Image (tube, rainbow, N blue to C red; front, side):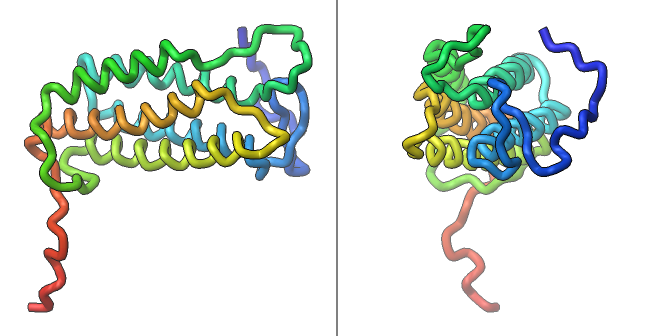
Length: 193
């Protein structure tokens, strides 16, 4: 259980922050960048939820909670040393649920014949923003996992990959099941007239 009685601690005033293990790292450390970008993704989803309702909003609410789980996962590196608590990790079952939800939402959409430009409705635009931030979080988590001294759970990386796919499909769903999608027209503005 988290109990925050004081918001500022001054412990980060010199440019470092604590991981869940207590280890201190620079605020620009790749691990901090990765879970900080997961937090940005969560904030973007919160913005999108101002414009969603019903089943889609319920899915997004669950995802927001799971992104806190993912942040906890990324902020607790597996060093091989025993911890006084069981670290929170993303599970393959959470990835599989995202896949089922992608399939369900995508089943209501017509096939794409062009790339989709971010926009259409406010919800769709915000979901596209969340998608692009999620892709950045994924790139950072993958880069972190490739460092020999770092460990990132494979399920965490899979979750980010599926989440960006979910957010794309959700954006189309929010655009009246794709009817209000703004499609890319290659070279449409090349004619100077």
